[in-house]
Length: 306
Image 1 (cartoon, rainbow, N blue to C red):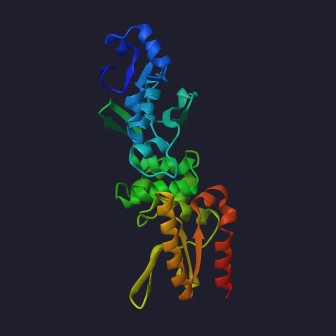
Image 2: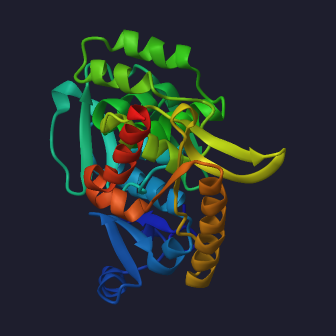
Image 3: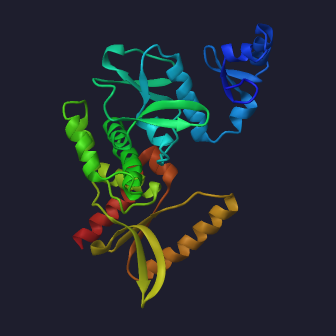
C-alpha cells in the first residue's frame, strides 16, 4: 500500500514513500491528512470519496491495527459491512476480543468472547488484507443480544429475506451460546423475525408495535375495491378493519409533499370503504414511540370492542 495511492497508510509507509516528518506534521495540521489512529493516517479527500461502508471498514481496520491483541469485527459493524440495513448507520466501530483481553478503546465498542475462534470468517477488501469478522448468523444473534427489538428486526428480517441466513442457522448459534449474556432475550426477539418483510422501516415499526404490546399486524397489504387496487398499506389488522402506514420522508420537500398528498387520497378511499386509517410519522415514533402510538392503540381497542 503506497501513501501516494491508497486512502489509508501508516507513518512508516509515508516515510518510505518519501515524506519527511515535517511534511507529515504539516499534512495533519492542514487537514490534508487525518489520523484514524496513532501512526495510521488517511488522505482526507480520498477518504471522503469512499462509500460509508468502505469508510467504516477502514475505521475498523485502523482500530484493529491499534489493538495489541487479536480481534474481529462484530455486532453492528459486522452487520453494516455485510450490507444489512440499519435504522442508523453505526457511528462507532464494534470489535470483539478474547475475554481475558478486556479493555477500553476510544470511539470503539469492545465486546468480549470466551472463544475468539468461534463463529468467525474472513473479510477481503481491496484496501486491506483479510480481516476477521463474525459469521452472518453470529452477527445477527449478537445484534439481537445487544440491541432493542426494532433494531434487531431490521437486521434479522433483511438477513432472512435475502436467504443469506436461515432460522435454523440462527438457532444453531443460539444453542451454542446458551450460557452467554442476553441469549434468552435474543431468542425471544428472533422468534419475531420474518423473511417476508423486505422493508427495513416496516421491520423497525413492527418491532415498536411488539414492544408496546400492540396486536401483531399483517404487513404490506394491498386494499382492493371490486378488483381495483386502492393502495398498499404498511400494516393491516383486517379483522379489526384498521390500516396504518408510515409516511415516507424521502426525496426533496416537493417530492415528500407530493407523496403525502397521494397517500392522503388513498387514505380517504380506504375510509370510504369502512377502514380506520392511521398515519405514522417516523421521526415522531423515534422520539416518543409510546405516546405517538396512542391513536393507533385507541383505534384498535375501539374496533375490538365494537
